[in-house]
Image (tube, one colour):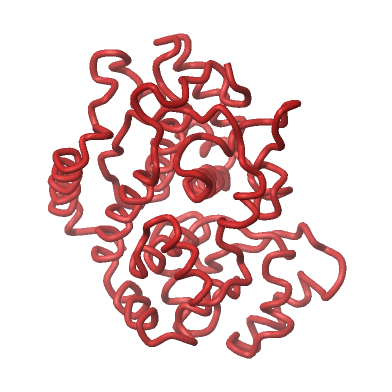
Length: 320
């Protein structure tokens, strides 16, 4: 389904971003206009090239931005490797053997360093590539607010504690999002990011073998791919209908009990409030696109480092 209301909602996104800039004064959509005017074009081309080479990687880099922002804010900490002083968030349970797309960030950062050394932060790169990946999959666009700086350290324990888990129910999800200042509605709409990408057997095994809120034929099909033991890294689409198209099929799947993760299906089967949002988005792609863009802007504003806080890393994998 194409968005016939795309231009109208794009205008709303611009107005929404400008109003946030005026109120908070922290981040700005034209932050690099004078210091690195080609920054957005460089990132856009990098994302385009990466997805052309591997369709899945767009979903992976969208996920990186999510997992970064839920740990001490959107500060690029997820990109850091281990050092003698701290353990990387990459090996935290929600990221270990599943977080990917780091090479895409590396490549884009290298291009930006050639064009404007020491100017564009890794945290901002994550925010921009998340938007550009969504657009490449046919989803909405929005004005990314920029001006974040990069953290000097990672927080592995916080990654274990605060990143939402595939086993979460509505109550857990609500608490997890609330802990970073996001609303119940943000939780439901940002879960819609699972309309693209793949998940490992390890993340949905319990759901397909133990839960009752799943279509029987769908569960039986998945059990062949993901038995009770073994095949841990076997991949299945989060949205079995259109795994690389950003649309509302994710929500439509929940209506017929074909959500891949427990944390997905719980949005429709266990809570009346979340059910109403799921039904609305399943029927109204324009509404989903508009709300997703707004929620991504809000998520991107979780505790950014600005002004003299943090640094602009030259290499996203290590502090300067």
